[in-house]
Image 1: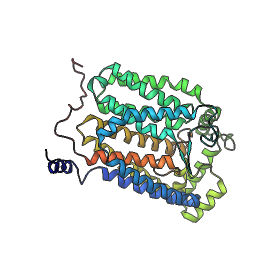
Image 2: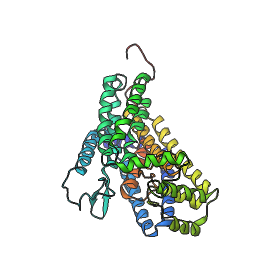
Image 3: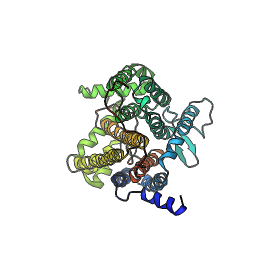
Image 4: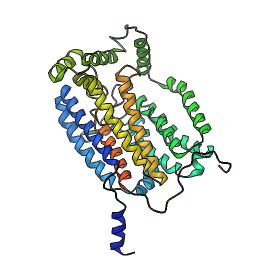
Length: 390
């Protein structure tokens, strides 16, 4: 084939109008709202967040140009690198200027003037590696193949859990189940994996640090109407609920929001608790707008997966979309007092370099998947029936 022919074929494989635009539009709107919300409470950080958002958009554009086959080829290498970095975080004796613990957690590696969180990289690598494995029918229709899938999720979850980072560790099982359902795994196997995940909650609870167990205790007390922990282990949750209640339907506006935030001293209000700032300033309507934007992002991701006939990009789209939406649900639930506080960021909105850049990386991959047309010759699609030959 001539160079001209190859180039023409390459151009013909690109869509102009596709579901990826929904993902990018929603992500851009969420990022802008996040910057404004951060400016409400930490103006000095808002400029940095805007710069990181621009960096994230640039990185997302770059990754969108990478063919999905290249992502598949690099998937296991990326997962291996991510796991090595997670192990590196836990090695005793690493100099403090490289790995600096915060509140007893070893999650970050210092990179010049920016902290890098390896667990963010592992989230993407996990989805890519699992999609690479599940693209074969005998891997998702046979229980032996699902055992390998469990061997992908368990090390990642375990290493992140002992950092400790309960919030991020909670994201892997929902993403795995979503990808198995999309691949066409047998329902009995899905039930077994779900039961294994539930049974693992007991040893996972035993691995939690005392302050993490305290947060669960505080949540239970809050649900029961017991306010004795509001000035101790339940302080952050109580402050968040107070500010959310003050927002009511329409919010209190910028000036009053700044005064209330200063008076209530909500910890991590620019980071894990940014949703409380949003509801305080813009009220319930602000919360609904944010949830609607995440819904648009989710619809774009699912439409991108539906447009794929090739298994790998389809599973990647499902995995990344479920990862982002699961993170949103957990973060907003803990801010509303419906789940224990885990220190999990709100995608595209919370202050932080790794979280924001990686969220845009996910958006870029989803955009690239939606942008490309599948080749005419592709592997057989997914099946959801329990055939005799399975």
